[in-house]
Figure 1 (tube, helix red, strand yellow):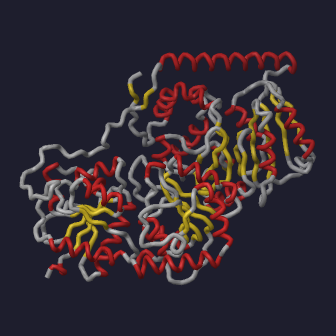
Figure 2 (cartoon, one colour; figure 1 turned 120 degrees about the horizontal axis):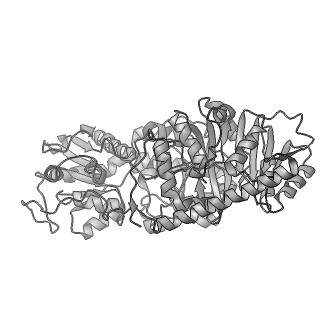
Length: 626
C-alpha cells in the first residue's frame, strides 16, 4: 500500500540548524500520520521506494561536494521543500536544484506562486505545530518580557533601537545574528530545538520584524508556529499569507511606528495576553497542525509512482540539462572597492604626523610650566575619599563639552550598584574641563574624580590613565558622547558575577545620532570577531583581565581600533566576553568621529592585526583593485 512508504527527510549536516528544526518537524508529523520517517544528513536521496523530501535544497546540495550528475539524479528521486522568498539569492539558487524534481514544495505562498509562474508542478506546505514544539504543558513563570530572535539587518536594528527607551527597565532579550556563515547552533545567543522552545516558554511576548522593505512583509510561519505552540504572544508587523490564523485572535500586528505603544499595552494587559496565547496555541497544535497539511502532500507524492524529470511545460524529459548547476550567488561577490589607496595612506600619515606634532608641543609646554612633560591635576568630590565602589566607570574626554554632561548624568542615574566615576580630560581645547568641574560641584555626594591632563595623550593612553585611578574590581568604559540606561551597570555586573570565567561583559547598544540602529548586538564569537569588530568599547572589564593584558595598546598602527585589538588579545589567550542581549546603553553615531580617519587605511590596519594575531580564524578577504 502506498501509505506504507516511509519518509526520508534530507537536510544539510553543516547547514543552518533552523532548517534541521523544520526537517525534524516534518519527520515527526509523518510519524503522526502513521508512516515511518527519519531525518538524513549523510547522503543523497536515492530511488529506494521511500518518499524523499529535501529541506532547503539551496543549502543541502551546495554544502555537499557531489557532481552535477549525482545532484540531478538525486533531485529526480526527491521532492524539495523550499524555504526562501522569491527575489533573494537563496531562492534563485534553489530554483536550479529543483529543475529535475517532479514536484516542488514551498512553505511560503510567494514561493509557491513563483514556481507555478515558472511552469513547475508545485505544492504549498503550510507549517503547523507538532507535539515536540511545546516545551511544557504546565503553567510556568515567564521571566522574559520581550523577546526578539532574528538576523541583524539595518531595518530591524533601526526599529529595535526606536523602542529601546521602553525596554531598559524590563527583562528583554534581543538575540540577533549575522549572515556570514550557516548557523550551526554553536554561535552565542542563537537557539534551536529544545533550547529555543524552553526560551519561548519563558517569554511573554515575541516581536517579529520584517527583514527589509523588499521582503514583502511575508508571514514567517516557522517562527510564528513554534512561538504560538509555547504560549508566547506574537507581536508582528502587518504580514501577508497568515491565513488561517487571524490577526487579533491568534497574533497582534502593528505598524512599526506604533509598535512600542502596542508592546506596552500588551505587557500591561495580562488577560489579553492569556487569551491570545491560548487561542494561538490551540490553533497551531490542534486545529491546524503540521500533519493536517502534510498528509495531503504525502498522498500526492504517493500518487507519483515513478519520479522522472519533467520540463517546465510538464512533459517528461529523459535528457540531462547541459547547463551546469549554479552553486553560488546569482552574481559573483566582488571585493570591497577602495580606490586611491596610496593617496588615502598619504592623508592618514599626514594626520598622524600632525597629531604627534601637537602632542610634542603640549609636552614641551608642560615641561616649561610644571617641570614634567605629562602634568595632571586631580580634583575629587567630597564623596570620593570614603567610597567603596563595586564598579568604577572611566570616561575619557576630548572636545565634547556639549555632550559630556549627558554622559556623566546618565551614569550618575545608575540604580542598584555602588559606583565611582573617573573622568580624564585629555587636554580639551573647548570648555570640557570646566563642564566637568561644574558637575563635581553640583554632585558632591557622588564619588567623582577629574584627572585633568595638560598634554594630549590620545584615547588609549587616556583610558589607561583613567584605569590607574580606579579602585573597583569591575571597570566600565565610557566615551564622553555616549550614555547608559539606569539598569546597565547592575545587569553587566550580574553577568560577570554569574560567569566567573568571563573577562568582560557588554550589552547591546542603541545607536542614535546620524544613524539609528544597534551596536554590540551579538554574543562573543571569535569567527565573527575576525570578520569585523562588532563589540564597542562600552563594556565592563575585570581589573585582573585588564592588568593581565597591560591595558590598551598605544600604537598608531591600530588608531581607532584599540578596543578591537584588546578583544583580539583576549581571544588569542582563550578568554572571552559575556553578552547581555538587552539594549542598555546608547552609542552616538557621528560622521566626524575618529573611526572615519581609521577607515582611510582600514585594509592596511586590518592586515596588521592579522599579522599580529595569526592564530585566529581570519576569513579570506577580497579587495577590488584600486
